[in-house]
Length: 114
Length: 111
Image (tube, rainbow over all chains, first blue to last red; front, side, top):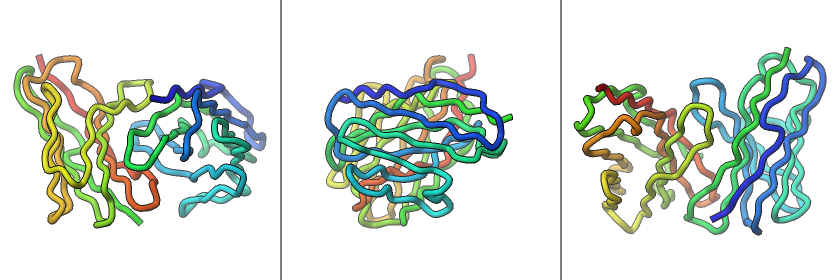
């Protein structure tokens, strides 16, 4: 199994600012993903974080708004840029070791934009 | 891309009774189907999963069935207990290894 540490756990930010969320895995993983979960809703995939190359974004999400880094196999960051109240949500990172196996989740970052 | 539909959105069952949650998927190439339980304020936790070469899997009070032809899979919880109250998500993983979630089922276990 993999243990994922995500930080910060929560933050309150002013609109127009940016927040970077960090995700650290305790072992090398092949795939890392970033999800958004709005209150009472399901998890929506934002992007796949690719090691050493640009992230792959899902429809409706763009790099300028959600830049992602993955400098190595155990670490990734998601930045929420130029925030507005609509960005208030929980953001979760996820990691998988190999195909067709369990995905593990970080504890999530609860973001409130005021 | 993959699309996962989940029903019902809310389910209330009497303690001790069974609960069934159903999901369908669209991509016939999907081959791994996990179920996650999420308690309030916590991260999703895997409770059971099934691969496409298996039709049924059971783990104590929890079972999952898969019908590849019809592209649907179901979660069965027997002898429900208060601690089963949570939100349950089905998911499908396809050829691109991305996990696509259903919209979730809020399960209430009534005393």
